[in-house]
Amino acid sequence: MTGSPFANPPVEPRRDRPRLPKDYGVPETEEGLLPWSWAVERLEAARNYWFSTTRPDGRPHAMPAWAVWLDGALYFEGSPETRRARNLAANPALTVHLESGDEVVILEGMSQETSPPTRALAERLAAAFTAKYAATHGYRPGPEQWDRGGLWVLRPRVAFAWKDFPTSMTRWRFPAP
Image (tube, rainbow, N blue to C red):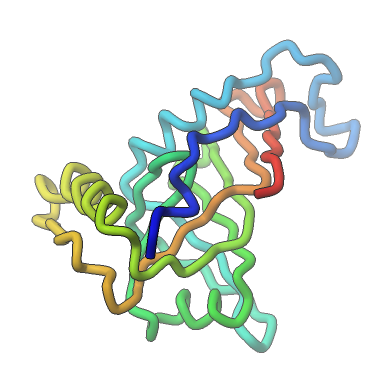
């Protein structure tokens, strides 16, 4: 593999309000919209991420897992035999929600298996996972961890967030890759 398809710097998404029924009280002005940096801070700091996939028979599946936010994308791992990975292999549509219901960040998009990553990306990911999870859980993956599969990436197409519902409700839309 020569170079990562994810090596370009992240593009700043377009920001606006999500469409909800008028009686929800979502402001019609831009006052109170959150900056993308607010969401990125939470994506980088989160310990656990809730992954929502769809089973082949159409039933939903939700499961928490570890991940790292790097270069404008969410990287996560797991055996190709997990329910999540099997669901994504059949239908790559993915929604990821952080743990908080008060400071909310939700990502939506299409996932992609990205194994094996380039050596440079693998080293950066191993360092990011180690920095995030070694002290509390002893997890220290090596760069070769994903040579045989099990590494996935989500580049969001749309994201939602709020900290003061409904006044700060914000939607970001990302350009098509």
